Image (tube, rainbow, N blue to C red; front, side):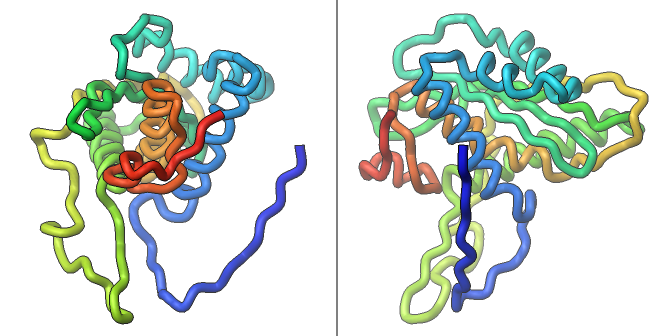
Length: 228
């Protein structure tokens, strides 16, 4: 495999947001890994495990996420499961998302299972809260977080036109912590970053369509996708 990249300067200044730079990169990497799995007719979980033989912490969170989410359990038509893995700031995180594409052209996240190994968990309640909040920020960005420019100005000004996921749309989230004696790692970003690709992979699993642009609402329904 040969991978290359190109740096492009943009006249639009950008700043940090939760998940920082890796959020966009991990979406690309984890989506492409799923595409490779599909191209070889391999289960996405099994495909990742084959690549991680020398990374026991990542293997552990993947296997635990598969177990807790009932990865192999069949789902109804139109519903899919997606898996994503992210390692950053000394922590390892796996997220499994169940999502359904409805007849009304909407995306509903039904269930989220997250497993994290952040080394020694000093405050488990705060850790779980960070994971839940990070996941919701990630899903909000994946579904709704679009910035548009008109006449040289950003059109979005507040939460009425740049929404966050509201409580009535928020899915049940189960967070599981791997017990560890390793040094404590960061926990603020890994949930946000893994949310993006886990949802995209769930939509692909449900429909066979790979959205190439986010936010998924509305671009998923505008035909802006490709398939294997």
